[in-house]
Length: 331
Image (cartoon, rainbow, N blue to C red; front, side):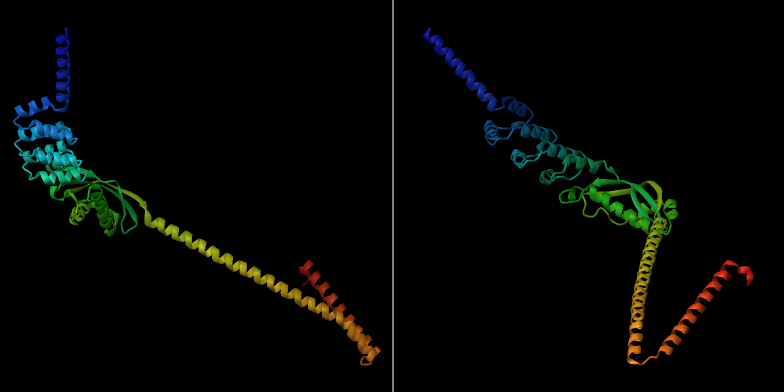
């Protein structure tokens, strides 16, 4: 009985040991690699586990590369994986480049992948060019008419410039700039509508793909629309602005005239006040002259008669003017 228990314990321990061993060392992956022609030792797989590298992420791409006739070292693949790269995508790109007779080394493919670009897509675009469609670009010809142009740019990936080269956004921006320049130099919007290929020829001749990760193959004008009359709108806005300026200046002149009028009225009121003040001093001066004997009584009465006569003449003249205004036929 005791021996049976001991044998059972040994069997359980062996099963646990084998379970842990097989879970730590991927025996199935090693068998697959062995029959695929890839020689990998057990200690290499154990080392991957210790370095926290998933063995399938290295072994499966290596099997794929070996079957495709590529000679890749497992150390390079593991180093690229540890650097944060996508080993499977790099191997697929190398295989696609080999099939398309495109010279691409593992180091360059790894650098492209670590730069954040899809290296497989880059190889595919290098083989099969892609079309980048620009948004509608608004430009104004010399006659003031707005022209809206949409272009399709056919590009091919330049493997040599994928690292450090500008992307699609730069291509779109440069093409838009070329469209604005070309339309702006046209004497009339009709000239642009008659020869839209002139835009593509001019833009293509500027070498817009310099410093980018692409090579521009062609620029085709997809759509040309006539927009607003920008020149007329600008003239209308300018006329409205001039009108407002003139109104402001007229209002300023009117305010100055009103202020001047008020100032003159104030001066007249001040002069009248001075006249009233002077007239108030006349009786005092006459009384003083009478007391001092400088003015006689007869002289005073003669002056009063003259003033009365003057007032009467003024009243008669005012009455005659009123009659002339009320009865103009009596003239």
